[in-house]
Image 1 (cartoon, helix red, strand yellow):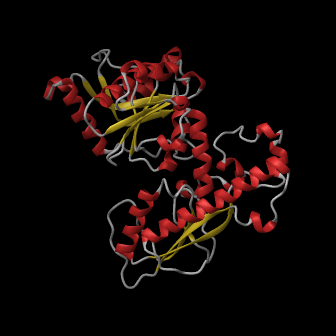
Image 2 (cartoon, rainbow, N blue to C red):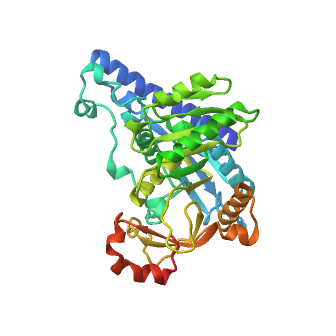
Image 3 (cartoon, rainbow, N blue to C red):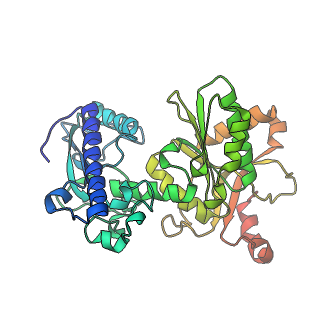
Length: 402
């Protein structure tokens, strides 16, 4: 790839154009093979590649002292990543690149990478080719396929080995990792990945879904920025729809077909709406879905749901706000060992405390009687109560409240 010194806007436009050309070429070749069994030749297959974004930082003097946690370099060098769905990610890409150009005088280039786009990632449905009687094994002979060896979280986990004299990773997730998760999101949640909003709630009981849907319908009846509620299975309720029609869309939603059904309340003002995902029970499900949500670079996700209180002073309906975790679920032990604490975010703590005050109308000691802050236990044994004699020592030492 030759150096171009593009503006962020020109770079994103070029990424969009290259991705559109590559996916169109792959779809066209798949359609042709479906109807005539004509295989793509080497020249055609060379078009089935992700676009690549390259950013060069040449330090002239001291490196800028940047306090923000994103859009910053660890040092001078060449940084690259492959990019997918650049049209959807354009606001995110522009935000990051503008900071890098402004603060580091970074030079941006865009070209075609050598990483092929696996053919399932350009299909809207998994059975799009089924009508032609073509097996996945047959397609794998002529088209690029997903390879587990190319999908990983080594960059995000900090275990990636940068090759000597090679480029450093520009993004936590490259294109093939992102596309993998976008397909998994649709598989688990039953909704198109593009409907996912930047503010995400995870919950563990369907009753919270019912409340969220009713709240969403109320927002659509009001004058405001909310414009649509997207349901699992493709259902959509828009502003102005009659209550009868809206409730029918809700009733007809095949949410039970999906392991973690998701509901997306979108806004038209660019501020970002809210997504609710019913992940069911267990920390394993939480890791599964957040591994995939992470590639969308959301602003925040919160687990809000039902838990069991451990203190005599607690009542059903009280709020529990975790500021520490006793991790007995072992889900993250290989990635974040138990001796490494997972810190609570002060901003979120204060925001949730303020929200509880707004909802209850209580302040001071009255609010403290409803809102308990402390350690929360997560356990991989859902019947841990049956081993109370073994569990109680660690729970008591941690001063856990739920």
